[in-house]
Amino acid sequence: MTCIDLHKMNTMNYKRMRRAEGGYTLIELLAVLAIMAVLTGALAMTFNLVTNVSANSTEQFLVMSQVQVAGSTISKDVASSCNITTGTAGNWHCSMSRYMWNGTDNVTTTPVEYVITDGVLLRRVNGAQGTRIAEFINGPGTDTTFVSSSENNTYLLTIKAKYENTSFSSVYKVVCKSP
Image (cartoon, rainbow, N blue to C red; front, top):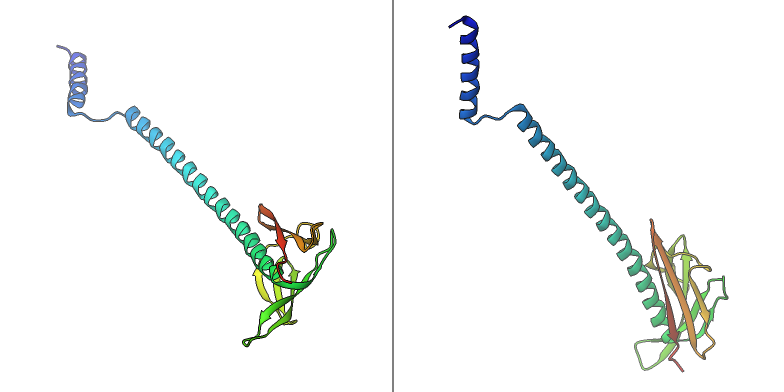
């Protein structure tokens, strides 16, 4: 046997021994790395999608709750009021004389006014500074309106809130039940 034949035999024996040991080739390792990269990318995209959906849901909940709180509060005041003053189309105004129990047997009227300043809806009683009712309110006058309806003692309240890229509006039909 020549020296070259011995070298070929040793190389062939080495390759057989490596296969018998169960080692991985470079191609196999690269394939595993590629699969792991694809799985990591898919996981990152899924996480990003879930995060964005969560943020959008939070914004939707925020604007819906602001509109509902504002509509509920104003509706309760109007339902138990007299001398209600509204705005006209394109003009916001919401004030009334609300019937309030004074702690004895008498019911008095108290002036209540709603004011929108920089997207914040404030409720003022007796001309006081005001209580914050809702935020992110659009308007006043265009998106948020309070006008008399064609029906007697009935008012239409439209409220729109907007936060970031999400907006929500609702129309309330409020009936004044006071004498």
